[in-house]
Image (cartoon, helix red, strand yellow):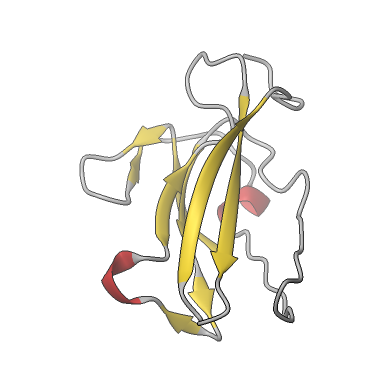
Amino acid sequence: MRVVDIGTAPGDERFSVTGETTAPPAQRTLTASTALDPSDTKTYDSVFTEPAWYEIRFTVDGQQLADDAGRVVYSPVPGDEPVGRMLTGRVGSNGDFWWEISATDNAGGFNI
């Protein structure tokens, strides 16, 4: 997973963000990677520290995924919503990749 861009809102183009944010430089260059065996999981907590919009690109085995399957625009706390959101990337036993965004009752340390 790699942050490609960061902004204040989703952009007009698919999988893009727009707007200038005051997020610190470390939030603009986030990357995370891991090697897992089938049925293993890895959770990264407290990665996204800003209530911004992130353009994210996932790769599997170092390769970009076809048909934009590994691209997503994500915000941990979009707008004035009182809940947080969690981004999950998954690789199936046959090598298929997909991502999910799910709500959580805990908005974390964000002031909304």
